[in-house]
Length: 495
Image 1 (spheres, rainbow, N blue to C red):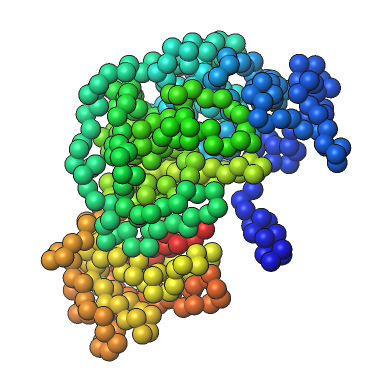
Image 2 (cartoon, rainbow, N blue to C red):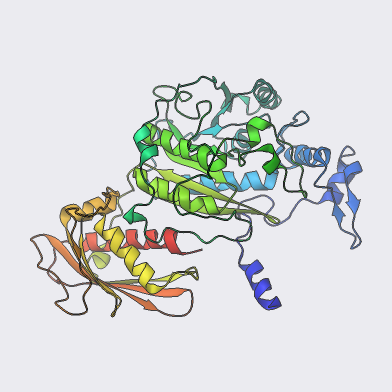
């Protein structure tokens, strides 16, 4: 039992490798010797290690101030009661966005030239993300907030750092009712769509219990966001951004926010609480993104509860985003999760002649959560392909699916232009059978291929695909679709 627990701890994601503190965590003793104002907050445990009292707001605020000054050359302060951020954790978020922007997932086109421009939703008095992003990477930022105290101190923190002050704009959000042109139809859609087979997520010890897989809040709670504008009504006409980021209000009440007795990071009502909690708040960002589309290359948010990930990912699939990415932020014993999505069409990958001529493709699906079996993966594959319009025949006895997809179906799958599957849909759902031909009648210019799923060891599946017609004119599309399928399965089933 002990060895299993140790193994699980070792498998947890580590701090981002680009993070300044990945190799050498803050040395409290050294900092106390160099900064007398920090010394009163440092004490030594029985094992001789220097520590601070994490339940003391003054101690955590002074640590943040010293780290920003010592390691980043930033002058910083916040008044009592405001949310005090931890520098290593916030740096993780910045470096994750850096990875997203530098990847070739979506085109790198930008109307801002070579400059990266970000939008920090609810920047707070601490203004931590614009300060870190500007100082570490030279990014341009707009930071928004609604309270006078947050706006005043965010401005002060920017002006206290003249070397980056020109890179950061602090923008006031006007709190007005009925200012958001929300498309109510999105809120009214059911999140339980057949395209979401296999979307459920493992709930770990730190996650809240999830009593339903639907997009429902607890009885009595507000089912949608009711508050000041988030992106719509704040982003100006003609503006373009590379990304937005957000540390949302995690809680529904201040009582819930104070349940962790081991930390005291402050936080006002506006920073910590939202009717419906982070799920409602991030859902509204999703609704805003549907209207703003490619105004942002990437929409991102931090998430405090892992159980909310599956619900929000289902919402994103529902509204038709092209790309979804997730990550886990780790700092000590604290875990947070990151969610990113985009409406920018994925970059077309150039397939070499060698790849284009491949008729057999495969990948290992590792880290499959315990509650999922090979048949769950098969059903998810069937759903994924059918939502693009392809015809599928699933054989549960041989763990195979025979697929026929036209050129239009292939393009729909690659662009993620999937339709919701309903009973009576034009999409053909072929009844499961253990016999018959390996492929249906193939229309002109169509792909016909078979997908097989094999159990390897617990938690690992082998997914193989073979092109059935050697003279097919679309082998390149076959390879691209298989890659898209691999990405979809990893999101749905792997840790």
